Image (cartoon, rainbow, N blue to C red; front, side, top):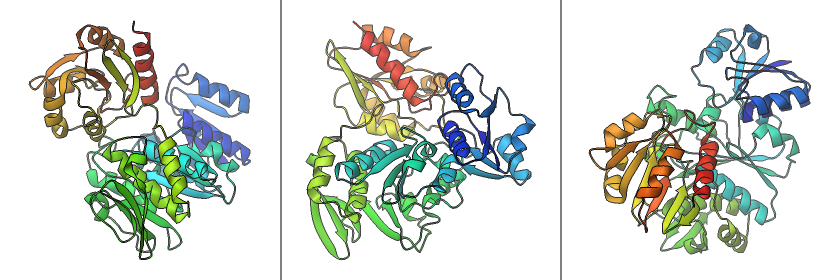
Length: 444
C-alpha cells in the first residue's frame, strides 16, 4: 500500500518509519521549509523514505491511506481534499494502535496530561508492570508500538487533535482528567466540538474496558455517552462508590462495594491540588491492576515531576526562576499562579488560541507585580493587562531576561507561564522552555 504522511516532525517521522517496517510505501509531505526540517530529512534519507517539503504536491493523493500529524489543522485544505477523494484519513495514534499487542492507557484532558502520563508510566514500572510512555510525551506511539508485548502497557498521552481522526481506537483504560476551553482557534471557537473530540477517547470501548473520569468536571459528566464501558470516577470533593477519592489528606479506592485507604496526599512528591487529582486517576488504574498500596505509595513519593511544568530552574540573588512553558492555556496559568505565595513577575504570550483572560484577572491583580508580554499575542496581552498591572512588550525571551534581571526584586519569582502555544517563535513548548532555561542559567 502507498501511504501518505502529512507532517514531518515527531509523529510524522514515527508513522513513516512504521509504515516502511510493515512493508508499505510511505511518502511524507510537509509545508515547512527544508531548513526547519533538517533533522527529519536526515532520518528519511537514511531510511530511504520519499518526502517533499515547502508545499504539498498532488503526489500526496496517490495513496490508499493518509496519516495526519496532530499539528495539521482538521480543516486544512490538504485533509479536506483527501476526504473529497475518498482517501481514508487517520491520526498517527489511530494507525499505531492497529499494531499494538499490549494494553493502551489513553490519557487526555485539557491540563495535566503529561504529568499524569509520566506518573502512570513511573508507577506501573516501579510496581513491576512493564509500561511504555508515548504520544505527546517523549516518543511517538509509532516509534515504540512494535516493541510492546501482549502483557505490557502503553501510557499514551492523547490530545484532541489525535482523537479527531480516530476510527477504531480502543484503549483498555481511557482517562479524561478535565475539560476547559482550549484550542478554540482549531475548533472554530466551538467549545462543543472541542469537548466532543476529547470524549471520542471512550467511543469504541466496551464492557471489558474502563473509562476513568473526573467527577468534579461537569463538562465530562454531561457527555458520558458510552453505555457499555465500565465507568469509574475520581474526585477531590466527594466520596464515590466506584473509583478514587480524596478525604482529609488521604487517598482512597472504592470498587465492588469495598473502600480502602491507599496512601496519604503527603506521600506525593509533586505538590498542588491539581496533582492530587492527577494521582487519583493513576491510583484508580493501579488498583484495577492489583498493584499493592505500598508500591503505589513508593512510586508517588519517588516521582519528581516533568520538565517544563512549574519546573524550578535556579535561584539567583534571592529571585527564583521557574519554567512553565507547558502552560499553553489560561487554565494552566491559574494552576501556576496559585502555586506561589511570593510576588510574581510573569512572562505571558505567544501564539494565542482564543484566550479569554478574564479567568486570571483577579489572580494577576493579587499575585503579579509585572507582566512581560511576548510573541504575536503581545499586543493583546498588553491591551488587556496594562490597566491592571504594569505590562511591557518584549521582542524575545532574551530581552525579557535582560530587563527582568534589573527589575525583579529579592524574594520574588520570575515565571514563564505563557498561556499560549509556542509556534510563533519556537518549534514547540519544549524548545521554548529549553531556551528560557539556557538564558536563565547563563545569568551571573
